[in-house]
Length: 230
Image (tube, rainbow, N blue to C red; front, side, top):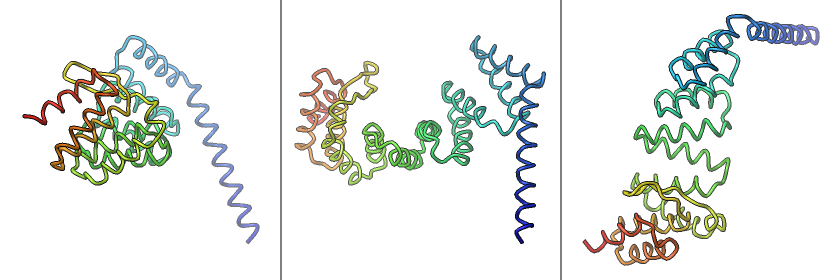
């Protein structure tokens, strides 16, 4: 029996060494180097189609190179090709469930494709790994959008108590364009939206006023406060 396992181990090591040698040979081959040069030129001149095709060719020649999948995912993400980005990220996550950039890109892709429930699951997975207040804020927004108001207000309460929330900044899209504001102000604005959805008008008013006390030029909070009296 010991001889059998020793033989298996030897064969496994032999295959691993052979594959490693093969992969190295492929990377040093003229066709591989040519496609690598094409990718670099396509990237240099912002020709995304040429660069993308070169990556696919490189992947076909060396399927074991996981970094090529990473490059492809970033490329699709940068050009907002969210369906393709998501599919690539799912393959990356299969190989490495803790690949944080792929998890983050998949979450944004799900959200951009209107799949809020799947986006929330992705952000929950990210939060387990990074414990970031920005991720928790994103979860609370999605929970509001999915009408999971109890979960959303619970997470808002957690955010208000965290010291990190007071120090962080959030980028908010407003009618006048993106606005960089205090995360705490954004959380109070979100709290007001949840309370408004719960038909608690006065509590919502207080929350929007809290947001404006922190950020007097917070456009969305101003609009939300005005909407309460319509």
